[in-house]
Length: 295
Image (cartoon, rainbow, N blue to C red; front, side):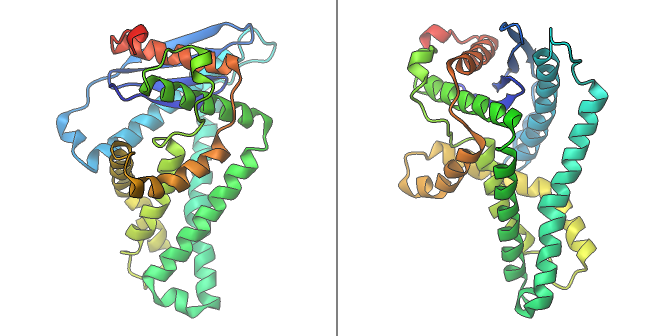
């Protein structure tokens, strides 16, 4: 069965397959707008283990930006307020990237450095230093998800996130893509990007432990930035492995924290949101030339 991934966007859902991607968005008038594109084939050498994780991360980010840009435009259609221009979206994405570096790399590293002054044993061990750094990073991540979940507009996106997962579950179980067949599925999915981020944080603790403990604060920060692609590659391989071994009890225990974490990034969707997710999936399956009636 063709693996399908997805992402929630503003009032819609993006779905991606091997050959292409689609995004379906509910406009203010109630109509569902769809955009689809065929993906260029990736050279085989770039699909080697670890390397493919870096490529997939770059592709996910670039497609995500395109999908958000389209959804922002369509979700404001027919409303009195103007849709965000490309420049404002670009600035928002750049600001979000800088904020992400500050919150999840700079702040944990600086906080750990301060704790190392108070508790010298932290600074004396690279493993302990990076373990504390990782725990602080996860704590900040949880606070961040909890905070944005209180924002009304973000809760709408989380509902579409839940709809995306439900529809993919139904597709993978070969159920009919109709609302009544989909509603009872979980809003959590083991291949979710939220689980991937948690894996990244755990893997980063292990890889950052290789950084010499006597390096300066700036060298530690720069080395963390440089190692992000390698961490993403290793994390992708683990996520790929765990999705193939979902019947293994040990693997299920390991991925459980990621599924629990998704309770912060998904909400129960309504029927109209599930309908949008169904439309996105149906359109991407057409790109793959898969008859949705036979799934």
